[in-house]
Length: 219
Image 1: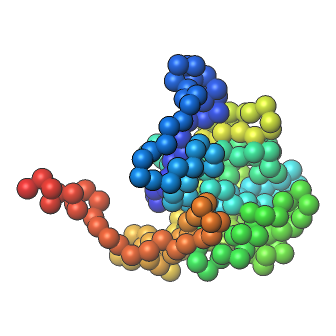
Image 2 (image 1 turned 180 degrees about the vertical axis):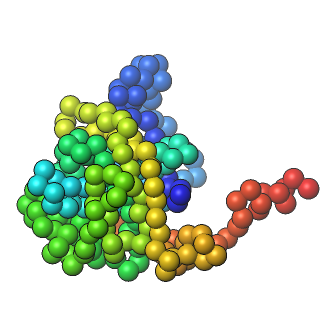
């Protein structure tokens, strides 16, 4: 499974913080430009594409950035009151794909156009779907890596949004992004969202080995 950035505490956890833990007066860090606590830059943010069926089996896709892996085979994300949020409540299932360099325009379109206003937005983008054989959700054929998920926890918020945890029951990848049978990030070319200036960037070159590069400091 492709590991993506996990989100932090939930709204309820934040609201339940002990008052003694809250910072009421922020002091500036010397030698740096300070921005306070509003709109912090959490980077990199994955551009995950959440696909669902509506009540009429019309496919919907939206881009989200507040999500990531939270267990060996589980992912979580937070959504406000979207068509996608309601579709997940209805079907208890969804698929996750990853926006890439070849689908920047379409993926951004899925993030800025609501299915409430454009129900056939998947078709308008020229994308096609295949029904998942494992969960009640569509697979978007143009995204070469897809996770099929069932919703195992939906924590509703008063504003209509929700924190959703999904369990991956299967994931599949197109042969075009594989090297020696494994997903090759350089072939997938997933993009990340830069919330500082609202731009997308391609995941780049390899700069080290996990559980390997740090060994030089152990010698």
